[in-house]
Picture (tube, rainbow, N blue to C red):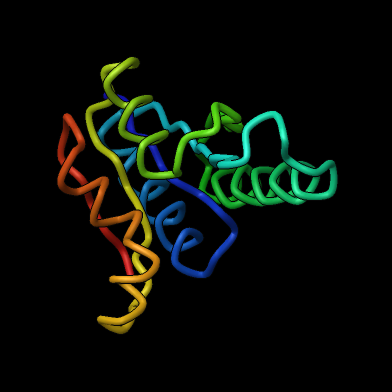
Length: 130
């Protein structure tokens, strides 16, 4: 079984990593933690460094739970939702775990919702964590 976790360093994404770590052992799952760099090759070096630090943190959370995981950045220039869904399709992921942040209706209209996109477009079940 393959579990994909979307991670950006937020409190919600940390909860997603923790839950994926709890599920991985009993399910015998392989966990992959991904962050998406929406700017693609135009990303600033400091943003790339911050993403790398977030991924290191996710790896440490998993290690603390006794779970090994693969962490990686995607710099394809897609939105985070598109990136996770495309990756899940390409790699035959069995479960996506994402953190959800409470937003007002106005924020959802203006900014959209990454989690909503993933839930609606994913080729596999999606587990959301708040």
